[in-house]
Image 1 (cartoon, rainbow, N blue to C red):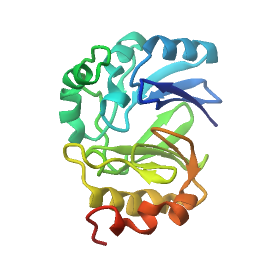
Image 2: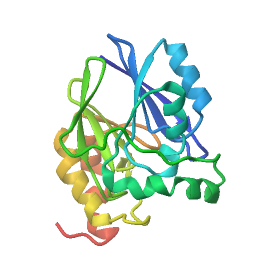
Image 3: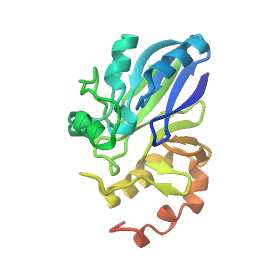
Image 4: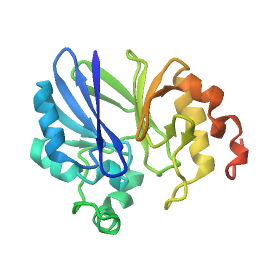
Length: 220
């Protein structure tokens, strides 16, 4: 029911994604960090009707084009959790610091909390709040497709950085173990950078999950 189209954006090669309901052709754009023109063109090529922007978190490479794209598409901004408000406020400064095109702040139409649901067409996604990389980070899980968009919580063989303001290693490990891995070993995840994998593969082989105590402060 969901078609996933990955559109890398910014010099950081962030995996912006277009989630398109195969029944209704409604679409959401997840984490538009840049390339507004390219995203609009791809939506048109797909014959998709954009209905919202969803954010996993508000770091620059995931959110810097949000205000411009929402204005261009005339769609609401959904997420992340309100604890990432300070990152939204920092977007203009961060864009200047890293040499990105000018970025604007914005006000989400809806903040998300753990257990919320959001829909695109006939596909429903459950929201899990997974702080640690940022305090307001969320992920989007579709049970029917056994698929989850995880932003920068988890990568194939690694995890998100926790050395940014209000990042916390122990909190991130706890989020992964308590709110992400229980979704099921068969679930495929799309990270914010790099390729996909399954939660089961990461449970078995990801060194940060097998031996979290080796990489940072951690208490179970």
